[in-house]
Amino acid sequence: MSSRRGGYGGIAIVFLIAVVAVALLALSAAGPAAAGVPGTPAPTGARPPVLTGAQIPSQYRLHIGGAVPLTGLGSTPTPASRFDSGPGPTDLPFAPNVAVWTDPAPQTRPTEGRDTMGRTYVAFQHEVSPTNHDLYVAWSDDDGATWSAPVAVANTAADETNPNLIVTVGDRLTVFFQQDGNQQAFAYAYSTNRGASWTIQPINTGAMLTRNEYPSFVANGAGAYGMYGTWCTQPQCVTGPNPAGAWTILMLFNPDVSSASTWQGIYFGQPSDVELFHPASAINSGSGDLDGAIEIEIVDDTAWDLTWFRYNPTGGFFSQDGLMCGTFCPSNDFVWPSITADGNRAVTGAHFFNSNLGAANVILAVYSTNTPGGGATWQLVRLGADIGIRCLTCGHRVLIGRAELERRIKRFERRGPMAPPAETTPA
Image 1 (tube, rainbow, N blue to C red):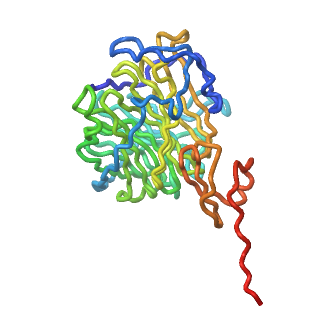
Image 2: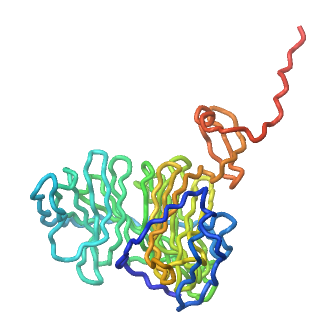
């Protein structure tokens, strides 16, 4: 199947459901409705149950497909192109909205960042024609009161869309974007002079992961974590009703974005009737995990849901932590997930439209305070300056300072045998 992909459209937010992790199972006692068939309204239950762990049905589980060989394809400087800047405010400090740019052509899909010197950046796509968009960036040194003339980030003959801006160590700017000039590559542009000039860097993803779309990345020191949607024709993706392939998600990691040769890629190998779309990325600064939220297909080309997970590129730890609705209340339309993290805390949510619900348009969100491994009971596995502990819920291992561990211990479930006294040598 080839699902349609569109913009956000009109979203009416009716109410927000905030779900605390420890109370997830108390939300609904209703059993799941039938899964439905393509072309029919999405099924619904009384309220969303939020499925976790073993409750997630096997057909909606995420499957790590394997590593992806990635190859840098050489970089190309973006030709300089500047335009007139936008107007200044007229009524400080409570001015009306300030235009970044006054060009009459549509400018859409803005993404923002801020460097260590207080400069605010906004990157956006600019319509040259309905089938050709370029990317530009403008910046403000006075918290948005006035803006620079926009500078071209990517303005080739290809259609460049959906920018995603991050700022890494040394105020290096990177804009990941979608492009159709080379469908076997994902692409980003970078600037090392605070936005004054840009260079495009494509990375080859091979013939079986193509049409990379809707990037979502976060800075990780000098590096980056993130994801693209991708069209997959790997063996795992051609099972199901559409042997031609399936949309899935490509996870990408780089410890230093200044190096095009250190990218790592891992894809999800899903059947063609359980496709994945529209990734959203965050990072758990405590564990180094990628916190991901993605849209998952519940009924082929008919109903969609939100699922979220954690993946650690160093140790290979993976946990699919939840599924918002399953067959209870999936959305009749795309849900466009979002996620943010602060240390071990994360919030993820999405827009659900279900014509069978009393309020058809809702934002459903989950708030989680899980520990890095997802459980509350840990086993001591290593002693030293840093203590190694293993989560008995999922097996995830972390290192933690002795003082921090002692502060967090609530109680001992059981203790090992006491060490024997040291032997003494007879005098």
